[in-house]
Structure formats: C-alpha cells, structure tokens
Length: 257
Image (cartoon, rainbow, N blue to C red; front, top):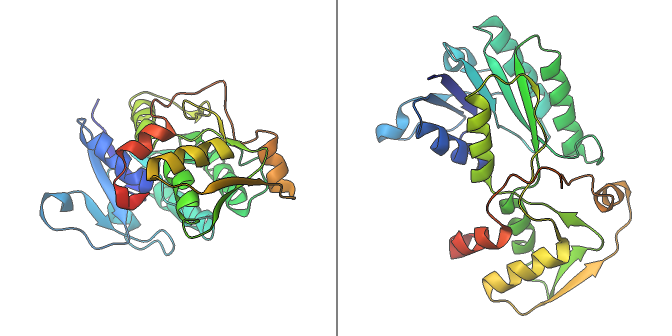
C-alpha cells in the first residue's frame, strides 16, 4: 500500500540512502531539510523546515502517513528537535513515527547516546503510533575515524574494542521493510554482517587506501570504553547487513576514504 512518508534528515548519510530506497517504491516520499530545495525533478516533495525552531513543520507534515525521523545534530539539539516534531505531529494527522536510534544507547554513557535514549522516551510517551529500531555504527563513521588520522605516523585504535558496522543501504532496506508493514513498538536491534576488532577494521582500511602505517592499539580508561569492551554496541544475534566494511571501502570513491 502506498504511503506518504516524510523523511527528516533526508540529506544526511542515512537519509540520502533511505530517500533513494523509498523513492524506488510506490511511496510518496517527502524530504524535510534546512537547505534550499534543489532545482529540477529533485525539488518535488522537498520541504524546507527547521526542527530546531519548528519552522515549516506544519506544511511538511500535512497528509503524511509516516514520519521517518533520521535527523540528528550529534546530540546537541536532538531532544528539543524531537519534542517539536512530536508536538507538530500530534497537532496534525497523528502519523506513525519511525525513529532510528543506536545500539547500546542505554549501556554506553556517551552524551550523544544519552540524547538518543531521551528521544526514544519522548517518542514512547508521545501518544503517537511509533516504531523504534536501534542500529550499529555505519561503515561511513568507522571510515571517517581512520581518515581523520591520515596524517599521523600510526593508526591509533582502542584496544579490546570491537565493532559491527553496517551499511546505510542495508539499514535503508530494513526501514523500507518496517514501513511496509504494521510495526508498533521496539524492533529488534540490527547490526552489520561482521564483528571485527578496531585493529582489524584499521588494517582493512589500510589495505583499501594502500597505506603502510602501523596499527597501534592503545588502552584507554573510562566508562565509555568499558561499555564498548563489554560489547554494549554489538548485536551478534541479529546480523542483518549484507555489505562488509571491506566491500563498502571497495565501492567508495577514492576521495571519500
């Protein structure tokens, strides 16, 4: 059944993949963005608005059946933005709200993770029909971590820490599946196809970019690292992703890794 879907954060890393995936279906896909609408066919379904102020939300939400909430500010204003989105949706047609959260946000005491968990609580108590799915880190984030170290003499990684990165296209596929059926409440957490140590991921990255620098695991203190070492960011029982980190790097443009 065709639905009208509003994607917040539709120009972000996940949002772009989701919009591409949903646009290939019979769904009416709308994008909420602070940016000016592009020219040409891409302008169709584009709504300029700001979750931080509420500007443009009423127009974007008009007749929407589903809100897919992918927008994030890295935790700085996520809670306030989600609160405004809920209020606008409650005053409108009361669409279903699908929220993308992070695996381990209740176990790893990062400020960003705490913000994601607070957004979950707001959505759960909103009175709207809702679905929440937590996902592991994207391949893009892992690659960016290593790219940021490109001028260092060695690649530094936290010792004893593993990740289960997932491709945003695989997340988009799962979200399209969730939207296509009646799903209310918490969905099972999802992760990528492989669990690898940070050092293994660094060596995969090094091989993809043709580097020779040593990979240097370092022991770091703190509650966040303890949570990661305990595997709070992993979902070994639900590896739904298909594309590995190595495959992601092989397909990524050279300038983006």
